[in-house]
Length: 343
View (cartoon, rainbow, N blue to C red):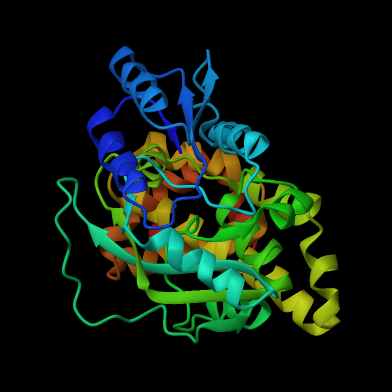
């Protein structure tokens, strides 16, 4: 668990770890050049419980120029871990008192289990449970072939719907895979989970706070888009080559669908920023992904999804083609959109 400047939430998270019914823990807390109040609390818990290990950074690993440099904190924690299983938890989340015990049991009961997860429960910043109605995701058996879980998720099924870092992973498996990649979520779901059995206990509750200070929300609001990390993962972890063990057709499907989903999600955020008048964020996003034709092919549809009547879209679309006049040359569809907006 890394931390910087929210000691009240950190205290709540750590106290939940101290209450775990499974006692054999390493609680690795990473001081990400934290505030004085936070550091003081870290010193207190280190003195209180000999299961606590502190890792210190003198320079904060987060910056708007490179938000995902934060993964350095995860790997610094992994480097000092000695337990059989490891999971990362944000300091604004917390787990039920029996969560670790139930995760360990999944591994012990099935030696082929390499990853495990509980059930995510949404909460607000005050820790109140957010009632979201009947559950729509995370319907799966106690043990599932990881390949089936990953494909079901990729194809829009209902077997998985948790925060991307919820997985507890065998430490040696995580280390062998390359540790925590900067594209944490996709690396775990498509680079680790598929190649073993994945355990699940819906009675093991992982409380996930939803609030405006969430890293993904802050990044999206600024127009930051992790395309470099996404394509680095495909290349560095050789995702298509790894998936060849399940056949060439499946391996190709995984990579092409991941790319399409990446482009579509980026286009949706671009359309949101553009139609909201946040040109700075939309421009920053395209600086990351604008060199990919697949992204621009998704843009017209994203704009249509955002505001259907073309009359409302003409202003944003004209602005778009003023900034990037060469877009119309990428496809006949984009050229038609430009011409229609200019009428």
